[in-house]
Image (cartoon, rainbow over all chains, first blue to last red; front, side, top):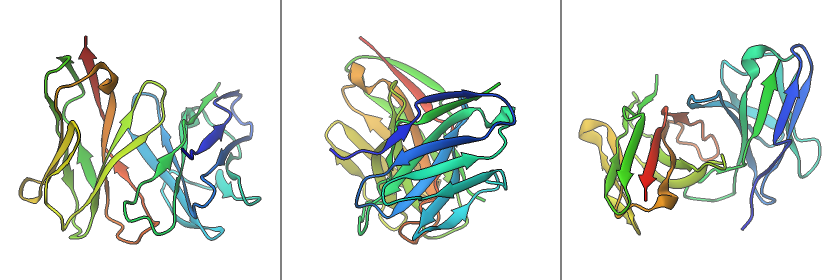
Length: 115
Length: 117
């Protein structure tokens, strides 16, 4: 079964460092998303991306965050200067074309720990 | 503003018992979508169901069933004859973005379900 893959599974970084989280969505999907889950809390929407541009973003997604689809397969989330409160599990998701279910396929997440 | 409330933080039941997970939502929109996702110990989010606001028919899929009631703004999830593999955190979510592809989900805080063998 096709799946969304994310790397790294866990990254530890120092406050102020740049981090790039990578995602490979399902190959024929056109819509891409990042969500995050602070430990033990609810999952929160960060950004949606379609046709090489951001469709919508939340108030969490400030100037420190950016997304990119550098090639035909990867979808990346960059945090320019990490803060302690960026520590969370980051989930990438994708949605296929013409799917009536609106079924977002989520990856297994990348856990980011900022020290 | 949208809000999803899952008042049950943790539930434990003995295997083979039925269990219902509650979800109450708030939205000002007349068109919206409701979801349930499962998060097993491995961490990924697994899609279970999506319902639109115009379809109040209950849905059954194997041991899973969902009861959508607009009058009480609830979208409850029942597992019949629970199994140990059902142990997970279950999230209810709401999207009031009707355009396909703009699936900006608002999640509840989740219910941790433990099935005791």
